[in-house]
Amino acid sequence: GAVVSQHPSWVICKSGTSVKIECRSLDFQATTMFWYRQFPKQSLMLMATSNEGSKATYEQGVEKDKFLINHASLTLSTLTVTSAHPEDSSFYICSARDPGGLKTYEQYFGPGTRLTVT
Amino acid sequence: GQNIDQPTEMTATEGAIVQINCTYQTSGFNGLFWYQQHAGEAPTFLSYNVLDGLEEKGRFSSFLSRSKGYSYLLLKELQMKDSASYLCASRGQAGTALIFGKGTTLSVSS
Image (cartoon, rainbow over all chains, first blue to last red; front, side):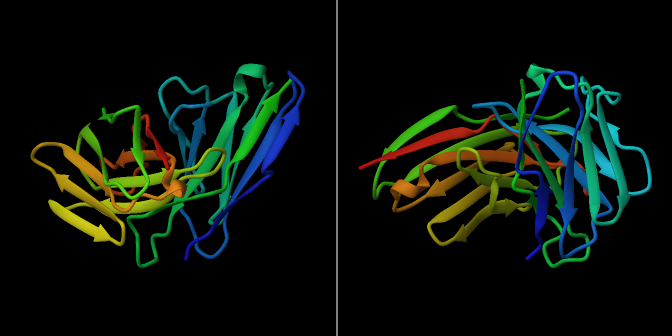
């Protein structure tokens, strides 16, 4: 089945620094990937839709200059949290559909990245 | 916009049956999904409904009524390992992202 990986699985950084999270589709090409954020005991909140070769589409309330998304290839999207602050500490999960697979409706999730900003 | 409602918490005992309800309001409709999520892990796919009716898959079944904007997830023969958060999600337009409800935390006791 379609596999999505993320790296790193967890990261601790100091306030004011930037952190890059990678999302890869391992066995399929994803023209579109989605980035979600999940705070403790809350559900997944869509942050942005990442489109290969074009600018990402951000959800209302998500700062595009703070959460930089790059989708330079059909198998890789990156999310960079710039000038991170403790309130950015969260579980970041990427997701993608396999448009060429049997289950084009299904959205496959990466294992998530736990970000802690100290 | 989209709005998805489901109960916050539910409890049940081993071997029992539990039904988790979900109501949704979306601009457009391209499917209703259920995911299971254990603490600290990514969600795992359980079911997908795009047409009205019941989809059965082992111990789990999912029902959809598009006219009522309503779905439920039915879990039979509950096991302790079924203790998790169950997320109802909808897709408004084809190719767009899933939008999730707040999730229902299910606790299964012996």
